[in-house]
Length: 318
Image 1 (cartoon, helix red, strand yellow):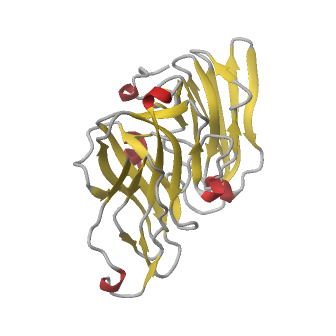
Image 2: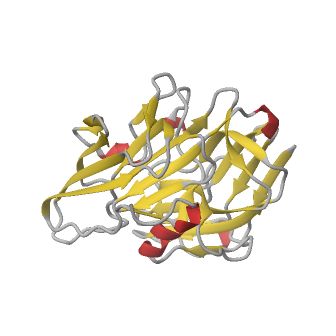
């Protein structure tokens, strides 16, 4: 069965007044069976940055998601993600700005993250799983489609993004893949060199399938150390961070080289920056986030500076 969920707010480039550049994403047909989520059209004013949240609920039968493709505009879209709300979301079909950066960072957990040895992040193919593996999408699951646009031009721009999800029957799934997100929390980076280190302990045994680091334009390096019963080891490192890595990340793939972590093992994340501006930088100018996928669990795991979300059933501070 093919599902298409879309929103429309009656915006048309000819009715906006002033020059408007049409940068709406080109939409591809979703897989069958599958689901396409399309955001309403929006206008971003010159030199403005805007995060929009579009809400909905999946009402189909419980299914596995084994592929995800993001459709957005390169150079304008910072991120385009479907997330799970951790608090009561607005009514389905609501589109509103996620104006409060702190609230935006804390209220939604990723439902899908980049994974799969055959993905091509540069082409927005972010999830492609082998037979027998999928992310569970249960009947009645609420979702928030977050889109983050940066308009660095002197023109108003018309934007619209979409996500294609590919489905596989639940009875064909042998391994349920979940997501994890470990984040530093709010940043305050003074001009000049800066660094932040934080730790998150695994709340349960898991097998890591993929992970990636995320910073923005002022980042200089990103690393993850694994602290376990036998000692410590460097697990992931981007020694020379480049601005393009924020949209084309370096993904560590463990699909063929198993990485098993135990409850209580710690991931220690370190980010460094060179703030070349005269201002203190925080979100959304910069971030320090480790995201990834692991199994076998179904709820997202989300940790902010050592503290886990109760709503993702991972308990409190570790």
